[in-house]
Image 1 (tube, rainbow, N blue to C red):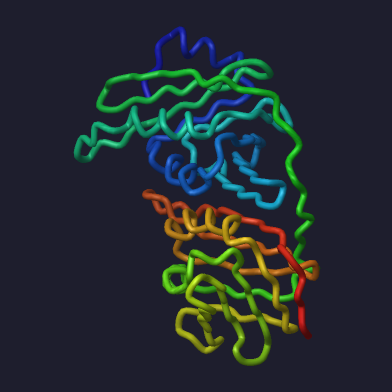
Image 2 (cartoon, helix red, strand yellow; image 1 turned 90 degrees about the horizontal axis):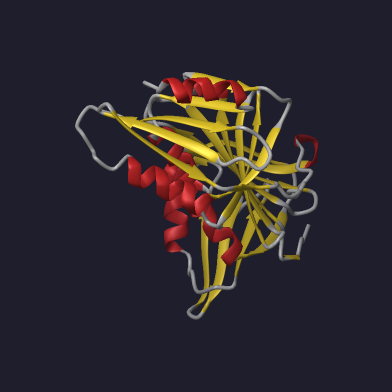
Length: 279
C-alpha cells in the first residue's frame, strides 16, 4: 500500500496500526457480526477481537489473527475502543466497490489512542481513499465465563447442515428449543410457531456430523430473536461447533475461511430463556 509522507510520519503516533492487502477479508468478518449498531474493538499482539452485544443476553466475537495482516503493530498491552460498526461496514463497502477484475482493495487502519478517530486508508488500482470514524470509550463487555471444563455437550458439524435445519424451522416461534443427548434423538431443534411444533433431528451418525460428544441429556430454550443474528456467521462459515455448559449457556463457534484461505473464527454466546432441563 502506498502512503503519503504525511501519513507515514503519523504512523509513529499510532497505538494500533494494521495493514492488509485484501480488505474484503476484514469486511467478510465484520458483516458476520453486524447485527447491532456499535462494537467494541480490542487490539493486542494476537490480533483484533471485535465484540457486539445485545440485551445483555447475546454476545458475538470475531477474531482476526495478527498473521492475517501484512503489517500489524500494537504499542500497548491492550488497545480498546468503541466504534459504530454500521458506519465501519458502510465505509468499507462504499470504498471498495469498483470491482476492477483481478484487483483487491488494500486497507490500513490506524488508531492514535483515547479520543482519536479510527482512520481507514483504502487503496485500489492506485487510488487512495481515506475516512475517519469517531470512536468512544469502550464499555465493559459481558463475561460469559464459558470454559471447556464446564461444557456438557458438544457437536461439530458442517455448516450446511445447520443452515438446512434453520430453513425448516418456524421463524414465527418465540423460542427455539435445543435438545442434546448421548441417546436418541441425539440432537433436536424445535420451534413452536403459529402452525404448531416443528422438530428437526440430526443423528450422530450423519455424514454432516464430524464430532459428537454429549455426556448427558439437556433441553434448553432460547429466544429466537436472540438466536437469529447467528445466521449471518453461519452463512459465511464452513463448520460450526455447538456447545452447551452446565448452566445452559449456548456457544456457537463458526469457522470461516477468507478469500485468501485464512481460517478465522466467530463465537456467538446466548443465555437460555428458561431452564427446562429434563434428565
